[in-house]
Length: 190
Image (cartoon, rainbow, N blue to C red):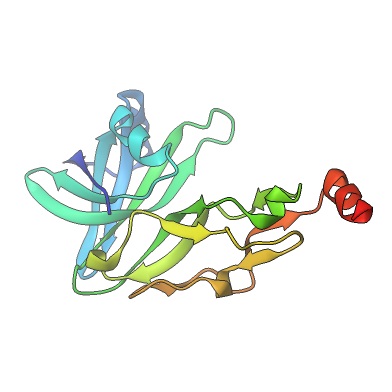
């Protein structure tokens, strides 16, 4: 799994006034919690957070906060309702000996039989929540649709990966090949 470095600075004040001042200086308030550490409040420059937040990929994040390093994953983000500015970010401290829950991107591979017959491939889930040890986490989850016929669907329950527990509900639809008017006409002519 990809790793990325972020530099943070410990926050001295935690009130509204301090938070507003931090945001005006393009510093985003953040918190790190989990696996036996007390909540650690810090700020990260807004420009440094963009490659982590505005991407379909998932990362393990090495947080360097005032000289100390922490391995973490992005847990939650809050955005301004009108401007979509980042308001707050939560990070979860990772213990490499314990499983961690994370959303991994789905990569569709192959040329579906249903698409060859004129159907349209619809991808309904872009990320799947999984739990695994850090050493077992892949960069993404590959779904092969080569044998997917016209009108067929791939559910989360149809997927399995070594050393990974899938946490997304098993009845969720990952992708399907939907019949189009052209494909129905083509099958009617045969």
